[in-house]
Length: 345
Image (cartoon, rainbow, N blue to C red):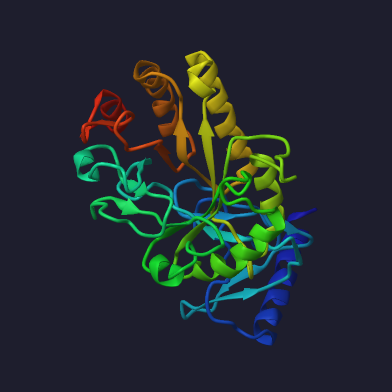
């Protein structure tokens, strides 16, 4: 194409754009989309859209498939931009707010219950958050972020849930629904209960987690899938931005009973499980709020010395070793050697 032809084409394009501006309504606002873990706007003029990805902020969006050309962004001269859509989008994105880093600057947390010694013994450590499988923090120090759990969809766990969940930034749901002695829930029943009890809490930036699964596999004695098989089905059924969304997934892992596996084997098993959780999460944040290698303290310490730096360098957002109790992380109510290894106390 000659230079003259190019100039003529540009003049024609300018004429068409001017006609569109004069004929189209001017909605307020930028009309942007946020992609990846960023707030970057997709701004493309007269071409197909390109997703802008920038790690580090606070949004996860499933990609939008574009079937035609993108919107044209035009400045009207009064600093009020106008978006004139020319795009037909397929598979609208599901937007989920997620933290880029844990509150307090770290991932490491504590699992505790009524039999645990005071958590204040872990002050001035690497601990930033705590949970106790319930919706009430008990005597947890205010310096730690407390994350409530709705253990199941039955009383007494649902009693006062609305009140107890209020004011918290993160909420966990249903404890090990894939185990008959725990929450024991078919996937469909869990999805229904989650929509009723959890999803309404997802307002004002509150993040809600999918039920915390075990590290089991196959089908349990009640005919319920276990582990990531259960979670995968849950996420498939809980995938509607208007009624059911999980901001993060949550999983529990335990090593060979009695510490009968080698430390190396447990490390490999744990890392494989976490990687499987990451894959199943499909871009959602991953929490491991309960994990433990069985066996003596020396073996557990060696295990932690390997997996802690691995977790800290991974995409896992939060984790907690099982648990604050004498004989594991404490002795006579004080942080012991294993507890110091874990918490950096």
